[in-house]
Each structure stands twice: as structure tokens, then as C-alpha cells.
Amino acid sequence: DAKTTQPPSMDCAEGRAANLPCNHSTISGNEYVYWYRQIHSQGPQYIIHGLKNNETNEMASLIITEDRKSSTLILPHATLRDTAVYYCIVSNNNNDMRFGAGTRLTVKP
Amino acid sequence: DVKVTQSSRYLVKRTGEKVFLECVQDMDHENMFWYRQDPGLGLRLIYFSYDVKMKEKGDIPEGYSVSREKKERFSLILESASTNQTSMYLCASSSRGAGGGYEQYFGPGTRLTVT
Image (tube, rainbow over the protein chains, first blue to last red):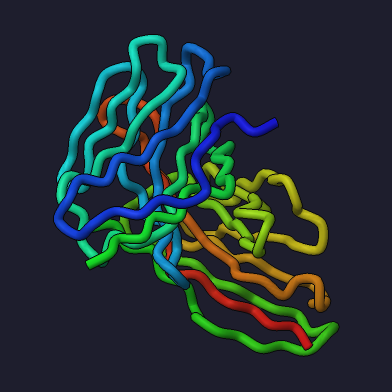
């Protein structure tokens, strides 16, 4: 069973914020929410992860709802180079990262 | 920056050949992984290792073996390559994040074609 649900595709205008949603209604208390992205023909790239609190780093912000059943990855000022497939993963185990189909984000000029 | 390198970006081998895919990481990570990625199937874990000389099977270990003689190096071996092993192979290493959880860092991938 899929642990996360993401829209298959989204568009975003260059320079605007990209908000990528993820539903994980069956998340358990010790599972983290991870976000990775994969640019065409490259290996996945780690973006951010969190447990309960919102997190921010130089790449993105992660907003997790209070009930932890959903989250949003925010790219504050999307550029053309942010066009990629974005994966939302929930896991409490280093060797159990299940990469689903993800969301294909297209940033348009 | 963490760097994970893989020995080849593209590789073409014949059916029945023994194939070695090498992966090296420079961040002293204990954990290393091999995945394959196929259209419509996502990334699937083949093998992983938590320490030198230690290995664990992932979801699809059949037809593969691994070797970890040094902490920084994790090799994937196809004992007798078959056409159904044509795929993108991705190596990763991981460390524990400051706030808990793990951050996996991936190499660029090796696109293997078996003819």
C-alpha cells in the first residue's frame, strides 16, 4: 500500500513559490516525512525532512500539519532548474525509503 | 558537500557477462545502498550495508551480490548479466540528520544495457 499520495504533475511560474502537497494519512508517530527530487537523468537529491515541526533550509521549507496527515514542500522562488520529479516519503527506517511516482513539477518562464 | 561517485555513467554488457558496478562516497557514512530504477516501477532497493563486510538484502536481491571491503566503497555485482537487468542503477549513502531521521545522498547513476 502506498504510504503517500501526491498529484502526478504541477506547473509553476518562474519566480513564484511552488507549493507541493503530500498526503500521508496513515503516518505513524515515529515516521519522518522526507522530500527528494530527481532531475532528469540524475540521481535523486535530498531536499529536507521533518518529524513534527516545520523545517527550513537553503533549498526549501517543509510545512507539516498538526495532525501530521499531510505536508507541503515550498520552494520559495522557483527557477527553471527546479523542474524535476519531487518525491514525498514517510519512513522510520533508513533502509525503507519508498520512492513512489512523485509529482512532476514544471517551472515555466 | 557529500559526494557519491559511480564508476560509469553508461555501460553496455553482453548476456552472461559478470558485471561490477562501483560506488564510492567521501563522507565517512556507515550506510550505503544500491537501487535500480525502471519506468513505472520507481526506485527499488537491491542491497544495503550498515558497515564494512556487512550486507542485507533489499526488496529485489535475486541475480545480484554486493561487496563492502572498505567503508567508502560499495560494489554491486551481477554474476551473470541478463537482459532483464537492463536498468538505471543508483548508489546512495546516508547519515543521521541532526534532528533525527536519515539523509540519503545519491550518485549520478549508471545506465546499464545488457544485450
